[in-house]
Image 1 (cartoon, one colour):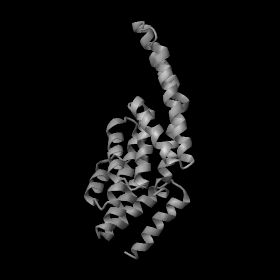
Image 2 (cartoon, rainbow, N blue to C red):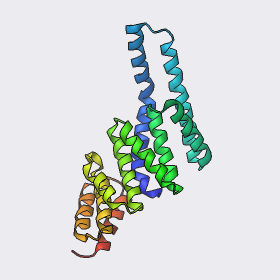
Image 3 (tube, helix red, strand yellow):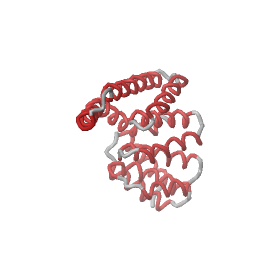
Image 4 (cartoon, rainbow, N blue to C red):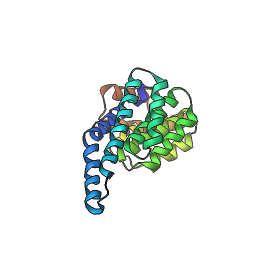
Length: 211
C-alpha cells in the first residue's frame, strides 16, 4: 500500500511546503484587509493564534506518522479536523487519516475521508491525489465500475500517467486486455515520475504479452 502512494506523497509534500511557507502570509493579508475595512478588534490576533495552533498540531501529526505512531497520528489528526476542518491543515489531516485507515483495512472510513477531501478542496493537486487514492480503494474492493467512473470524469492534468495506469488496472481486472495495454502505453508515454514508477508500468505491459 505504501509504495502506491509514493509519487502522490511527493506532490503532497510539495503542497505542504508551499502552504507552510505562504499560509501565514495569506492569513495575515486577509486579516489586514478585514481589520482595515471593518476595524474588528482582536480579529488579527485570533486568526494568527488559530493558524499557529493548527500548524503546531499538524507538525506533531507528521512527526508521529514518521515514527509509525499510528495512535498519536490519529489523535492529532482528529484534533485538527475538530478545530480547523475547513483549513488546508484540515484537508491534510483528512488525507492522513484516509491513508492510515486504508493501511489498516478500514476501507469504508478511508473512502469517506477521501470523498470529503474531493468535495471540500479547491486545490487541483489535492483533488487529483484524493481521486487517485479513492480509485485505488475502489479497485482493491473490486468496485471496478465506480473506479472507472471516477477516473473517466476527472480532468487528468499533470497526473495523466497515474490516471491511465489505474485505468489499465481496471481494464485488466475486467478482462479487457487491449484497453489495458492502450492505457498502460499512454501512462508510459506521459510519465515523468521516477525510473521505478516507469519500471512498474513497463512490467505491467510485459505481463500482458504481445498484442
